[in-house]
Length: 503
Image: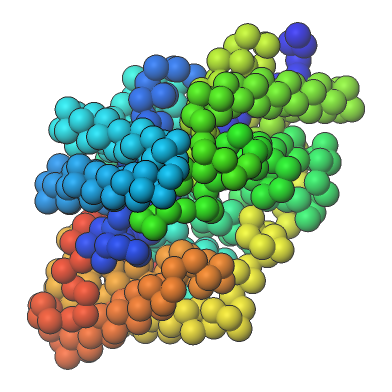
């Protein structure tokens, strides 16, 4: 064991677009219910037991939705877990039995019990999952990060006022929910352009993660070096040489033949097969996850030792992935994470939150290059001819909203400059935030959700335009007849219009 090798910072980025109240099957709020049952609830239980340093990002828009669970949304969640999931597991189990595949039928029934257990655990805690996640930081070693309000790609904002609205709303919601903002902010899609750090610093941001693979190359030692940007924000590179062990599609841990196949599905979208095409065997897969956890820790140790030998100083290895990979996309992912936390202690690998890791290392002064962790490591996923309709709709709405709110402030419209913006002003800003979500362009680029993202964009653009028309007429009130109006009930509840007015 080397005492000077540095540390591994595990960063889990948790995010869901605002889908609560926006449809159900096949696209809509069932995405959220599935993630609650298979990802967020098991993760809260794992981290409560493990008590290990870890950085957990919770986007404000995800929290907006989790905050609604002690109420009607939670009732729908329980109905999904206890009724919808029970029925589809029963039907597909019966179908597989009739087809002469009893082992597949048994696995379908076993997997159904995951949802029954989740329903019991959620109801037993009063459905207050958000408070449970908050306690991980208040009572333990987990560090909570926030993000922009609705996960907008910040370099693509059309105005400084729009950028401020995303950042200020996100930070304010985090402070209200968790008591304080520690300075850690997840850049949506890791999208960065030089100069962005100035606005980040103005909002109290002290640390972000960046993808600098194109700048330095996969596996370069520079990927283990935190960087001090000109505005004082520390940029921590994500080490893709390590991330690819779980996230490259071919040859990574989740692709092993023994793990559950995410892509092959039954009539009702269940997954009883292994990657090898056989009936999935959960015990063998769990044992394999522990082996892969040990292999991962050994590789991280070797990576840090290589850096220490090459640079003569300690490094910070940042492993960052979407939280939803662990438990949803990769069924065994949380068993693997538990193994990583345990094996790190056994093998002498120091774990640290990002803040702890940065505090122990003197950041280097270097100008990061513009980048993202999207396809091509650039912004083309969200800004290309394929998604031009989405990109222009968001920019057009942003510029019109900034202009309308500025005019309202100039003529002294009530609520334009004070807290708790009423009616049309708040509605226009909230619809803008919903429209700016990076998820819509991502889903179109990856052909993931049919026409759902385009319908969402059209609905929010229409509602934004209606609210702007009300502002232009000098009305602060807002009639309830706009498209999809009711489904925005808890999006950005901490929104203030002031960022749209600042010079």
